[in-house]
Image (cartoon, rainbow, N blue to C red; front, side, top):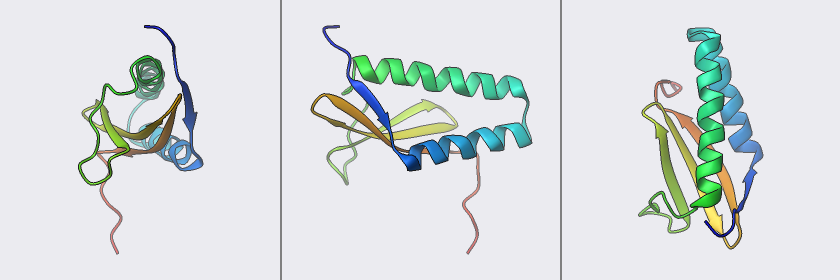
Amino acid sequence: MDKTHKVIWTKRSLSNALAIKAYLIKKFSKKEVVKFKRLLRQFELTVSNFPTLYPESSAQKLLRRAVIHKNTTVYYIFDKNQVIVVAMKDNRQKKPSK
């Protein structure tokens, strides 16, 4: 582990994280929110040390997809010396109907 990389959260990824947190508060307990926060800290630590750990998307070469829990997926880009978290997805939530 030579050097850690800076992790930057976009507005979209922060918004996604807050939406997931609100969903957890509504549907589950505070205990689940604490686990979610711990999961995000662990992801940030891991990806800052090993930014190429997770696989690249076949559709978009720079985009990487990290399944950090069976219910949570994080999408990020590793660019030079920084990791940019683009979006997050909670796999439990249903897609909004049109």
